[in-house]
Image (cartoon, rainbow, N blue to C red; front, side, top):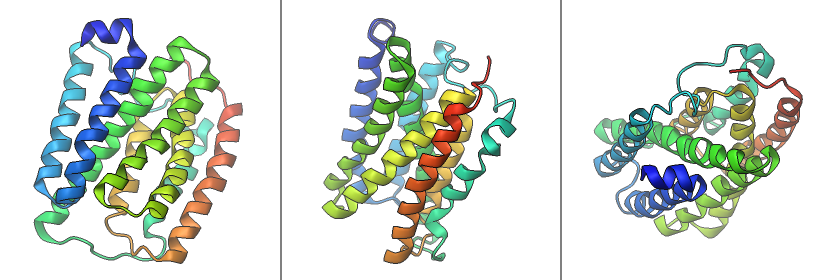
Length: 235
């Protein structure tokens, strides 16, 4: 694994993403978010990533050691925090109770960590090393969004999946730009986890979902344009 990482870092990242998609989507589709099976699978995946990063002392490379030193440069990430709670804009309801709720919250928190490490950490950093920042940002963001097509295999409707892909691409650009500018993955992990956990409590009305998707697209465009002009954090 180390040799592949050192010699073909992009392929290494893509390999991790493929394994994640092919492993987690069927488990999530069969057992659901409130299952201990999904929690266990996510924990094992997160542990494998963490052990790899720690073994080769890659925490600094992936921005896991520190919070951004000058958050005011990025508007204290307020646009990202506001959007991350969009799933509960139209109301709160308990979709799970008891232990299934605990498992679901743990699973969604781990999803935030794992997906940020895969798409922003492994893939974006690998592409940034081999090419331009623009191409790395575009590919990482599009891959993150299109990767949600695997939800079709978990029984999700095609139209719902298409909307989710557009939604995820918007978030992909936002997360990638934040990571590129502030050099810390921690805000992205936190926001991603909040989005997924909040989805467990959302009332999910059609009007509310439409507003959330549209707001995400508009704010992501505006915020990314702002971040494009922001000063990049010095290590």
